[in-house]
Image (tube, rainbow, N blue to C red; front, side, top):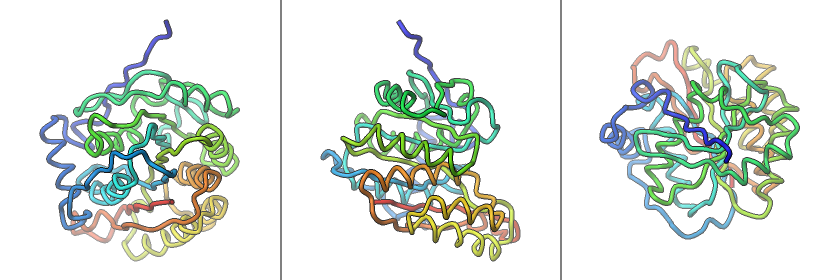
Length: 285
């Protein structure tokens, strides 16, 4: 029997609370607080009819959680997905250019999220860059921080997971992955989450100027243009590759528009706007 990999939470107690009660309370605050959508979403358990893409931040919940909540509130309205694909940047650069977590489970204080073995196998076989790579995921937070929101929104109906990390932020890598995701899910709706923060450690005015270049390309569903703008303007957006891959997949799966749901920065929490990290939530339908 193939060994199943149990991936323990790496950032519980730092990016989000380590206790179940504390985590549930903070997620509820992210939804209901003044920076969030103002209410915990009502969940539709009808089967989703169409693929949905999200851009979702991955900082500590006290900073980016309310922004992320806007995207998960939109996802709750879309219905029940069999699978969610979360693509995040590999901040450490360990492992394969595109590292897919092997069969098993992700563990958080809210329980376990099961890897979709069939979709993982199909994707890894159809993408020449994709490698089943447990080690790349062990300490990385960009996928992990999305999971408690999914568990809170859908509870026992939480979709199965395909977890992917991109170490090489190149346009050819992103497009090849996006095409492979589209081939894997061409016959069923899927929730695609691209995990990224935007400008890092710049004054608010500069961050907003820089991020607009990237966000304009995202809402135009232009993955190549996004990667070009990030390079041209030296935008410190850590997950441009995951976002480009998500956009490419979504377009091939029938999505035709995108909407900026929320844009905010860490200064809204700290009160210091001289050196912010910025976050955005985008829905692609």
